[in-house]
Image 1 (cartoon, rainbow, N blue to C red):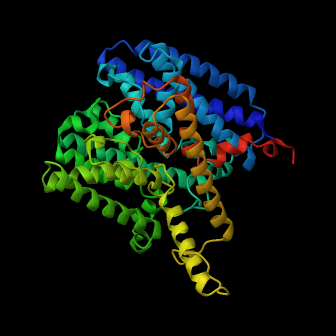
Image 2: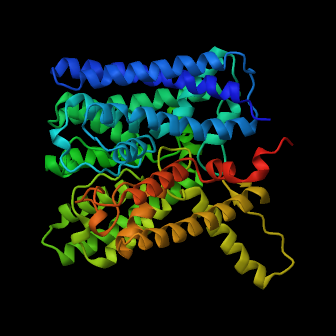
Image 3: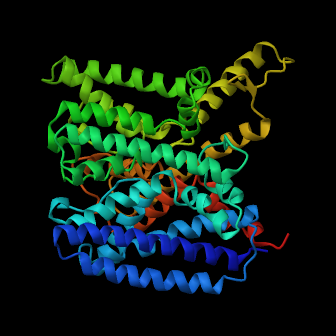
Length: 483
């Protein structure tokens, strides 16, 4: 049976943590003396009340979570965080429509970065800060943060980690998962702090530096400017953000190895190699095309190409140029990048490079099998044999990913949305990218989409952020059976 009391107790604790975040944002509102202070106090009071009620209702719950409980908790927690997280937008009247308010919040917590806002710079600082914070908290995972806190309340976080962690494997660098989570969050916060300092050196004020650092390390892409990073027109800022987007796309357990000076394991990682060379290859091709088809010089072509490739491959979604004005062949290349994504165990979306590595090795083995039918050809990555069960999971995931994209595109087109926009929005949402194609590209907001399309895309954001199976399992009758 599902331990509902334990689940609602943990969600209650999560809502109390979200209340603390509202109070932090209210401090920003108070500092700037703007009118959004009341919205945060009201949202905080409602969220705190709900959190205390849920925590009280679940106080007699068990102190252990089953794997099944983990899947329910993760899915429900993300939805609860988004439902209560939209309150400052809605109560303050900054996004007076429930559909748009939920869409914007889910886009933040899923680190997608798609927006329905047409005049971002008109918003008060507290609201902008909350908008950026949703990406930072959601980037590495609300639940990844929670499992570092759960042991305090006597609850094991292992099953939660198994449900939430991205990718086909869940690397643990310490026997206690809570310790692993704390180490990874320390690196995450450290990268954010360094980026804030570097952006301030580049001329950004402290507020914009923090918000853009949140969006970069969380690979969310929400900017405080309608024109995104292009607003600053600064090669220094573009190169700094490009570097930190790339770093944020690396598996955080690998970054932990790097911090611990295990450089050989870090450099020799197969997924990291795939990630690095895919960025290099796509950047080189796009830079050459831009150089010969646009008025950009060599350096600018390279910089714009590098920034956009890393931004989309890491599912950040920042923009320094409207790539819809580039030659159409580059739209195709950028779409491939969006589908592929960066590393598992990072804050990014997409299929993830580790799955691409596994698929490439499976494909290569099939060619060898044709020539040597009796040969035993295991799939090896980093000198370790990948179990057939993981290979099967990867194949199933990629099949489901493709099927969901096709069905969603058809549904979007049935709503009267053009094919180009439908494909772009769906791939962007399920891959947690942000910008799409056509009139949903980097120069536009998604406000013009019909409400039903926004709910569908918000669901796809959740699906992509939680790696499909975590959410889809809840729709299978077998999941809810006693045995």
